[in-house]
Image (cartoon, rainbow, N blue to C red; front, side):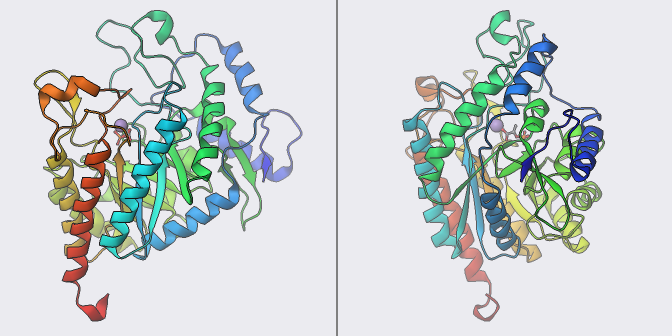
Length: 414
Ligand code: PEP
Ligand code: MN
């Protein structure tokens, strides 16, 4: 692995070719990017990022690729979770440890239910950039795009994108990674969103059969529902990476489009290279997911099927909070498992927004959080998370769904 330094004029031939493909990818339209007010300052920050150490080791990323191949083959289960948006203020040892602890507990419960090893990926050590539905808020201010871009306070100064935040994001991610490594085998992930930052974290990986680019910023990156345009920069960028990739699929995705994605991201037919993350909403999952799974399965590509039961089930509570109800989250997961049971495919994993803290952001669970309690400890910087109790309860329920599924398969076929 060596750093790719486009623009230095001293690139080796393979690096030049990689840099050319990267430039081509980044020349495409990119949704959800901030408009930095001062290009000179951006260049200065990118210069600094060029000197920093990678956050993840290539050998760790390669190990995750092996683990995900096992998930794709039905031999392991994937648990991915953490904050919707990490914040600089929240990058504390107690918060990180609490989130790692709840993931570990969920993994234990799921392993027992599924009768399979559980691969753990945290939304951590870099989950600082957020896609938003509107570019400005109700006051006409630029919207908050995550701590890596701007600050949530409703003033123009706070909301003005500041590229120096990319340096803090990198430093904080690096610190968080030390704690993650102390927690056993946990991989880290974030949304592949802010392209100036992602580009600065690339390394040339010339160890494999083909020279490729590898992100040193996370083991696993995913493309969100709002940035998966087939002709856009995010898809073209992710295609170039050696890292395993996730792709969120909302209810408007057709089976034909799903196959197009699979062919783009998995041209070499590598089991587990692509994780398809369905986030259909509990009302639609049973209708929309089956033809997608059927068509992708028929294509012969071995993907990881993962369910994000959070993002299709967000609504505003009577008292004005963006929330999700435990029962609807669980219902989408039940639908996901049912669909795969009927088609004979592996419900490979879940992707959830959770915290180890006792927040009151999602409704339901037991003891239940009710609407009047939402304001008590509603602390998220973006979407509502399941608290520690709700998270473990959800894991128990999913474990039961997976155990039932095992019981439904005749002994000889297991
Ligand atoms: C997220 O995972 O926080 C997110 C924004 O998801 P989606 O792209 O599926 O809406
Ligand atoms: Mn979210």
